[in-house]
Image 1 (spheres, rainbow, N blue to C red):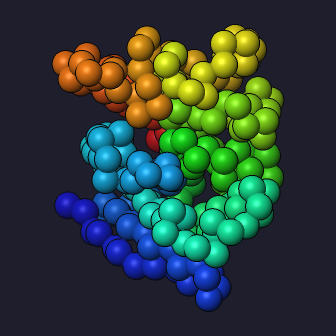
Image 2 (cartoon, helix red, strand yellow; image 1 turned 180 degrees about the vertical axis):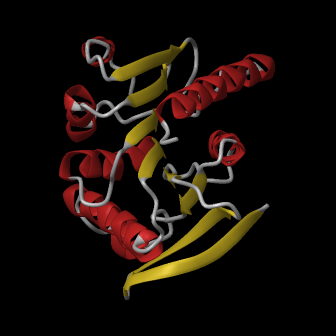
Length: 223
């Protein structure tokens, strides 16, 4: 059985961040912190199934449900300030929720724009411990995301489609040389990791991705 805790963190007058914390009744050593995309929420298939995988394998889950699209103050900021805002939102929720939770490991799983605060944490390391990461459709064109992956010494899995607008063949080839990274490219998949106009192929791709995510988590989680 699981306990679902839904609440929000008010970081300042312009930033309120809802979250859902899903805890097993039996204490878990690991938690997966999930950072959604700009329009791809934690209710969408990649996060829905990844959540099920975590819970099935005795890993608690924290959905950080920021919504920058509807925040006018966020939209009016320059790009660099937006990125720092995202990171501060994530840190605020993690610190508020997990400060005394007693987890031994944080697994970070992000998609699209969520890979930006993940990359910032990957290099600054303010809240992660015994960490591993799953990067779904990482924004490889963004230098800080690319550099975080290129230089990481933390076990990492990234998944991207070769028809994703952030797919850059030269950068992907460079990332594949990092021994700490498992690099997966899904043929014909777009930024949602779906195959355009082919539902069956999209479902098969989802199955493959979730099998990879589960294998990665099982290999790297704290026992």
